[in-house]
Image (cartoon, rainbow, N blue to C red):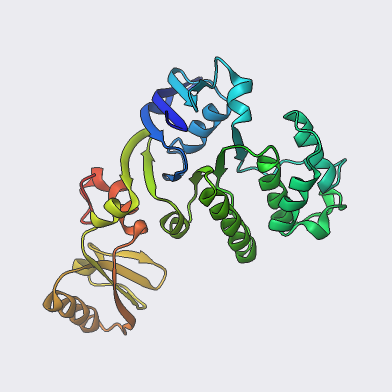
Length: 309
């Protein structure tokens, strides 16, 4: 029995401007103990899918099961199995950190939970903030409290919806060390993130959504093998020659494009130099998850980075 099962899940919103299909027949399972990544551009349907999983939204069609429990038919039982860290920072301004976690424990009917609360506070770098009012915390500290709240009832399944958005490097490292430890101890983790290097480092399997549809579902290793070879990366200023620009992905001064054999690489660099541009920091690397993600997302347009998934 999967930890989470999405079965032909659809969600349609009827608005004054017409119907909007947020999810369209999405089906996949997440096994117990997996560290699973759910990726997609903004508006792909990731948060809608998690909202349905959490019971915050109702699917128009299909079914979602948490350890065999239907999230709509038996919401309370399903919710006890989940610990969800939302995108938005939401807090009660009338309580300090420890009181917030005790209140959350009571919500799930967990008594005498101070030992686990102390462990959470220590593991997430909140021990010295236990008596601080939530209003006094920085945004990063508030996000740490959200993580602690999600874990306070020791759920077997942890859902992280953009948990490191806008937070500092220290928090990212602290959070991932702690979550990786929980996963090693047997907890199932479902992660959505726009930091693809995080997903590549942590996740064993990946699903990708695009415009509400499931467009990829692979083990990480298999997904990376579908990448088209190597990538030539360099920095330059000015306008690239049209033939090079048509193949390239450009971010500021950084240019990346598929790398063929040595002759192809030298021809590309020669064309750039002939255009009067100075080339810096040249490197050739293996394609990574970001490259594969862009291939999948751009496949409909027949982009040269396209990959069959």
